[in-house]
Each structure stands twice: as C-alpha cells, then as structure tokens.
Image (cartoon, rainbow, N blue to C red):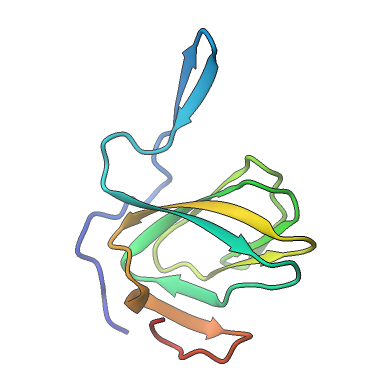
Length: 130
C-alpha cells in the first residue's frame, strides 16, 4: 500500500462554526483551509466500493434521506443534514436505499484517486486507484 500523505490530515472532525445573521445562519465547515469539496450522487439501489484512503479524511454531509453509510464496522442511516466523519485509513462505503441520494464531501488532505484501496466493489474495478 502506497502512502499518499503529503498534506496535513486532521485526526478528528474539525470544528464546525455556526454563524448567525439577521437573515438566518450558516455553518462553516472549513475556514481558509485547503480542502476538496465534492457533491456525490448515488443512483437508487447503487453503492460505492468499500474503500479507504491513506491521504485524506472525509466529512460527509447527507443532503437527502435514504443514505446508508458504513464507517469501519458501523452501519449508519443518516438523515438529511447529518455529518459523518471518516478518518484516514478507515474503511467506508456510501449506498442509496431508495431514490438517488446526494452527499456533500469535504476532504481534508491530499485528494487523489490513486490513494483508494478497495476491499469490495460491485463493478469489478481494480483494488487500487480509479
């Protein structure tokens, strides 16, 4: 297994700031930090591979109900708005239990496809990389 750590990876979920405004509020997940933000959509009844990464930790924010997330040995069914922290080197998987679901991913560290290690994959992709 190659180690893709080239940038700092937090061991724990970074603090999320809550900022109130007269019109409402917002949550700030990363303030002037180097992160990669992705919006993932999983088709109904489909799932990602069971995988881990050496070079990044991920904060997944469920945007829709109907997600199933495996983090380590724990299986979660988050509601829209729930935040799930996935430390580097932790096996994880995202699935849709019904219609399409969306998850906002904030990745801390060095985001690259090459650092994926797959343990199970429904699409017969290689054990490493894309």
